[in-house]
Amino acid sequence: MAKKPKPYTRILGKFLHKLTYRDLSKNDVAVTKSLLLDYIGYSVASVEEKPARILQGLAAEMGGPAEATIIGTSKKVSAVWASLVNGSMGHMTELDDTHRGTQSHMGDSVLPAALAVGEKAGAKGRDVLAAIVAGYDCGLRAGYSVMPSHYFKGWHPSGTMNAFGAAMTAGKILGLSEDQLLHSLGLAGTQTAGNFAHVPIRGMSKDLNPGKGALNGVLSAFLARDGFTGSFDIFESVKGFMALYADRSKPEKLIANLGKPFLVGEVAHKKYPGCFHIHSSREAAMDIAKKHGLKAADIKKVVARIHAIGAWYVDDPVPWTGVKGLYGPRFSAQFQIALALLEGEDGMWASYDDEYVLKKMKDRRVRQVMKRIKLVHDKGFNKIWPNKWPAVVTITTTAGKTHTKRVDLPAGEPENPMSEAEIERKFDILAASRYSPRRIAQIKAAVDGFEKLKDISEFTKLLRA
Image (cartoon, rainbow, N blue to C red; front, side, top):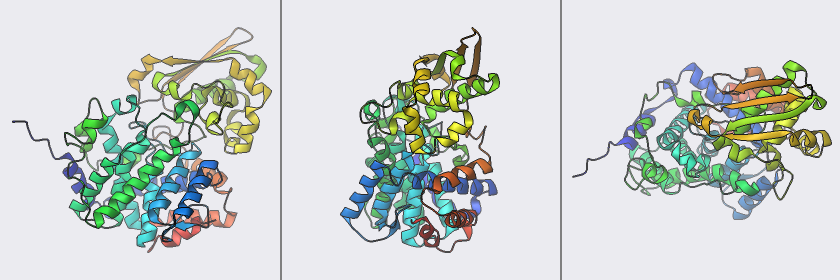
């Protein structure tokens, strides 16, 4: 007789069901607020992008009650549709939070779910903060249980594991019972999807995946609230998440060291736009150029060795071709390295402006340097991925000198964090695309005192255009 699997889903669900604001440390609260502020900035900056406008229009066409705000607009739609649109917008600018252990952008689903359901329910700020921490913990633990084979198989983690995080967050805000919360996870698990087939043409489905992760989680929580059943063992079932979504699972990761500490503290901020697989090589190139005062005319050849699994996503010497749009430069290591070499840190901050990026893509100097860049897909580096993002850049100068720099953990990772001033600067730049200086100050003050809000609808009003 087969041994009955350990009830991992029940153990995790029971622990997170009991989690309250009082269980959070000061650091947990500070980190969560930081991620929330960051999310609002990089989401509102996406409002006018083509995929965002398509989703906003579809949400309006589908109708439904005006329950939740679409960030940066005057629109209110159902909580389910708001979570989809806001979740997708969070992924568009390539400035979203990142978790290297699961290769997910958990905030793109957990945070829009929290805001949409919290606004509809009139939830207290402190309860929403606790629900966000629980959502990150649940989604990231789901990710750990199937990584890294989940990623190698072609699943997009920000669409798959994110659904569990959103379901947990939404379920806690709705006050689900323990069994209802488990059903919510089961329903999220039966909807789990998202792949990387979009990569060759840089398709918009990239952004749909975390939006659907948010929608799937929110829908699951509302269904469970109303008595719709799913399963109690979605993670460990022989027909469940770990069995179907990984070649080799790690069930112990689902419940290891619960709350010691909460996993929200492992999440990184992106300092500059671009796929995170680019950040180490771009940072290394920029450091070399700054240290040795290199100009375009000094650069004869650049070799960037990037972990092979990441290089596959970002090896694009012609990001301006086809229908790539802004996805092209955001996912081209060649373009990003060339821009970093020529423009340095000032250019990185300037690249928050899409018009600047499009202009630089046409810049003759940038294209010339791009031709001198060779990307090496280093399979050896895969051995330490995803625990690190290894890249080694070697620049050969026209004078015959060589300079080499290795970066394993780029700026923004918890071990190499952005300062509070940098996170605030990032928000100010992005939020200025839709908000006045006065509104920006109000949003920052509200996030700072989020736990004091009696009803987060007071906060979501500030997020409208």
